[in-house]
Length: 350
Image 1 (spheres, helix red, strand yellow):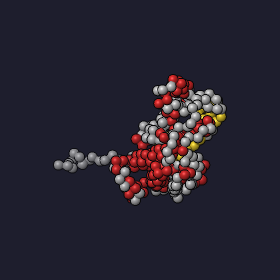
Image 2: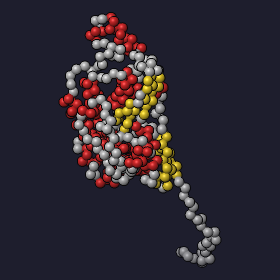
Image 3: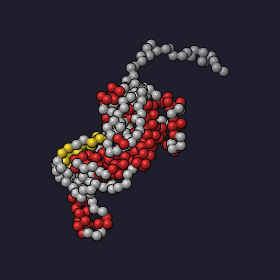
Image 4: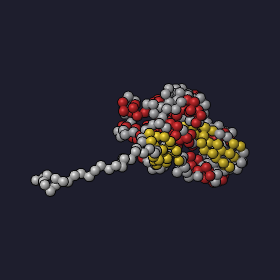
């Protein structure tokens, strides 16, 4: 049995005289968010410096989807360059094309017929609606809510607006003051969520001056206010769509200028000159007078601008594209500093 005579003299070893190591300073950890993170919705890379779970620094790395669109446009005619704008934002196709079309029309000094302008506004608002629905559902999906992605069309506001978990994850997260929003050059809901009323109503184009709608603005400038602006803007888009359908006049949708508009299909099948005209217009393009202009529209994500430069030929000499998200990513470091790592997902989503 233990203890015995043989084990009686056994003693535990003496304690070591060496003092235990002192607490060392924990350094910040550098973490890669992306470039293929599920919450990035594309290939966005963030190099984040964390102190535990708190974000100390956030450095966005962009350009991972750069395809040289601006350079490709220089080798296309003005008409052939139009499809490139569809690919810039696959959820805001019509708005991107609208900005480019307005810029070229300004250089040509032409104005489309009223019916064409109403159709543009109609599809611009449909695009706005689709974009906000996609943005809000994927935003909820990133924060852990799976069901709204499939059920959004049925009482979407009731599911999120008064949800306690949703409010905890968005209120006072990513706060942007009105002064900071202006300094960073924010636009869209990033600007209106901070209380600044800047929208297509402030600087109208096409027939926005003939429709009646309200511009929602926030008061705190956080993710929750920007979400509420999304919801209200969808309601306003429905108002504008209804007015477009009621006020749209009959008539032509093409400009009555043979230099830029192709002949009608019936004329092409009847007259050889019309067929030749159609062929030359789509292969050689039309001549645009020398000049430069900047045209911006209110896209779903913010101000989308196009700056074409014409040298008098049928191809743009230069076409600079202003993406709305470029300025927003520049302010991501300031918005995410001091927040938890999980809050960065909410900030990116709005």
